[in-house]
Image 1 (tube, helix red, strand yellow):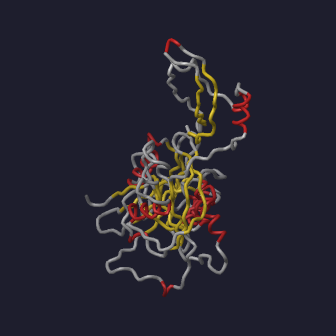
Image 2 (tube, one colour; image 1 turned 60 degrees about the vertical axis):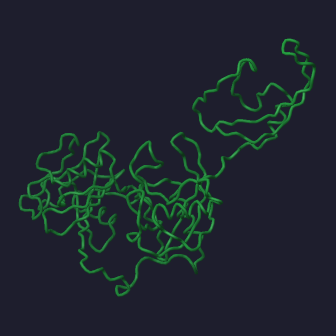
Length: 383
């Protein structure tokens, strides 16, 4: 419920009330307006000695002609005060910094989704710019020299109310891995064209793209690709991780697609596994679409792909570490076919509650985490 500021004084005569010892006098009523921002019922406790009843009604159904006339002169929409601020941070490679939130449904806003860094205004914040700077410091120990007001994003809270968020834009070219993150799971750069594959609020996605389109050509972020010699050298002791792309294909009945690997397969022979492949000189989504077509004759569109889990795993101690990206296809065409019988001998949809015993261990872990809505896990690492 929102309280609209005081808008009227009503002056009227009151007859004498001997029982209360009150003489005849004039009475001033200071009138306030309450407007609901939710369809949920709001409990109101009456002071019965003062009023005989109460009800919510549209402005044009107000009984008093003079009061109705005054109410109808008010603005039709009364926006709630902006008390939240977020940072729209971009770099010179055409990417935007996003924050993967913790998966705590009912406890935080947008659980398990990618969002902007930011938060609510606190008493010590003189302005909303102070709010966003404080949040950047508290959440990631991040300091941006120049922040410019860009606009307002409208989010929806758990009660279904619209919450306006002031957006401040700033340029930063650092590495998110160097930041000290105190809330959420991770920070990462994303290009505007890659946002469709993320779990992200449509308002945030549109906000990023609107900002990217607003930049002048001369100052717009440039393409991420840079000459090989300009790449930052890896620190001493760095171990390259293999990137594996996996298809989590779930039918409306809840069953999940698995393939039985060939007995002569170098990896997991005669074992069930999701459709998967290694990234070549390509991005992960392109790899997924290619592998689905080559291995099973499935056709998937880029906009129908959603990242649902990341598992960091090793098969045995000393092996090269691997990062497994599991993507859900929200839609696809075709039925699974054995396009590469030397790799896979059978496709079958399985009930996640009754998976085969001979299933690749990290695949079992990932499917369980996906079923629980968890975005990250680890497997095979020493305790």
